[in-house]
Length: 178
Image 1 (cartoon, helix red, strand yellow):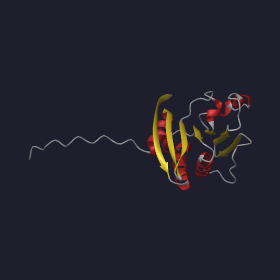
Image 2 (cartoon, helix red, strand yellow):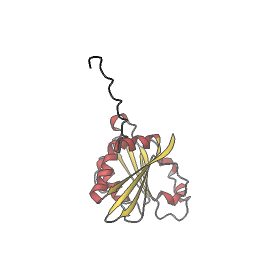
Image 3 (cartoon, helix red, strand yellow):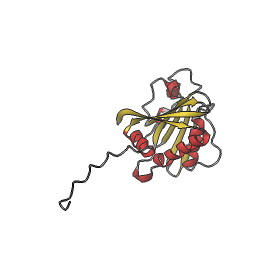
Image 4 (cartoon, one colour):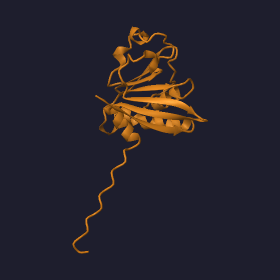
C-alpha cells in the first residue's frame, strides 16, 4: 500500500553513526515486535557516501556471519538467516535501466525478503517503490541521511526510528473539591 512520502533527515557525524542507524533497522526488517519480516530499502548517494557501510551494518545486525561483499561487480549478493532471505543489489554498473530486468532480478523483489538496492536510480523508475529510501549526502566530515517512507511499512519503520510526538494531554478538569 502506498502512502504519501514522509521525510526525516538525520545528521550522521561518522561511520559509527551510520552503523547505529542501520542497527535500528535490523529488528524492523527482521520481524520483531509483530512486524512482518522483509521489506525493500533503496540507498542513494555519491560514491563513498556510506551506502555499503549502512548495508553491511544492517546485515551484521540481522545475524549475517562471515564476509559481506559489495555486489559492485556481481550485481547481487544473497544471504539467508533462519527463514529470511536478504538480497543486496548494486546497480552502479548498469548503463541501461532495463538491465536489472534482463538479469532476472524481478522475482527476487519479494515482500517477504529484505531487499537492499544501491543506485536504484540506475533502473529509472522501473523498480516498484521501496518501503524506505535512504539518501546519503556529504555534510562536512559526516553525512546527512534523508529517510523517506513510501509505503505503510516504511512509515511504521520511520515511526519506530523517530516516534511521532504525542499530542499534549488536555488539562485536567478542576475537581469539585477545589
